[in-house]
Length: 573
Image (cartoon, rainbow, N blue to C red; front, side, top):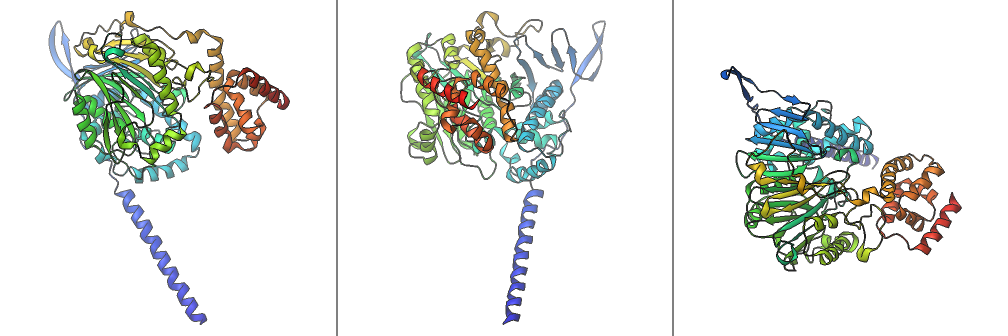
């Protein structure tokens, strides 16, 4: 009997060991067979003419030429300038490799900065380089088919950019692998964080609800991975060899489209929706919308492109069309793609939940409506549009800057229920039929909105010794910037990461720092309502962020409530 037990244990061990070997072999196969489909050929080296006494004497390889006086860089037929508005303006043309090569050469320092900021943010979550290497292993497994889900044209453009990227982070992946993976970061971020950092608001009006009857679109791109990430906002103007010329707002190295308009007056903006955690890669949303912007001129053409691509997260894509004279929303999930035309005439509102009948019984969408701030922001947009219609560009900007709640309720600062949460990477206003585009300048959407006339830009009517934007169409900065409340906001934004870091390390927070922080944002009084005692949060650091998020998702207390809570604060200070 004893011998039989030993034999059984022995064979069970063999079976278990065999299963482990098979599992390791399977994972190793998946890892080493992963193919990001890196282009094999080198980009052509652009040449420039060398002349003497008006006579062309030869051709030499192009190089980046810097004009420090104009804060301008040239490379072949492309250039990058730093506008007095603070925005970077990129102009590129040619085929995919030529565009990518030009982007990389012109913005190598900006690419390095952008990547450093992004990696520093990851380091705050995963502080060890060894763990980052381990994380790379799983990213390779997850994104092993990412290359085949990105059209060859865009892989070549990304490859061209990667040739100018730093090798400082090769322990995470090659420059090409990293740049490719960064284009899926938006999707993974909002899927795994429940769009915690990606909560956008947008709207479109036309006909009777627009001041001049033409299509008018406004959007906030609320994507926040730290203030440093948004330092170098970029407006890119593309003249591709194939497809339509277009303008896109993002950051250096980002070839996908987050907010953009092409030469036919077709616009694209994206709003995250609730997604299940993806199990594998597909086409990143920003790459899909890039394809739409470059190759579609009508709603029908945009919808056809959206249907043919599989995505691994859910997204609402607001499409405005000058040719169609209206806007629609393409509601896309990994399972289906639906065209939503709206429930009211001459108006469309988009936050972070689906509105079509096709998703009316979708459990994730229903849960999103029940538990998120998306319906509240939707209702607030309805209220503001009703109040201000017919809308012009200044009215659109005032809506995008609005920080109050329904019926002008005081929500405090940086409240997730408000249209302006003070986290927007950028804010944009489009007039597609006029090919006019307004882009916000820092801070958030409180700075000036500067106007670009894409008619002139796409036709090459640019004087490089002058600003590209149209000064007379500038929408002035928000008057809120001059108020004491705005200075409190800056204090709040500065102290929040400091306090979160101290809480995560279980470090003592000085009383004067705590008092300054609480005074900077009235919504923080709710911390005391939710947790009862701030110092309880110190003892439960994992819950501290949850407490603050609850505090910042509610209106501030009325005066008598505030006084009662302030007494509680004094008691614990």
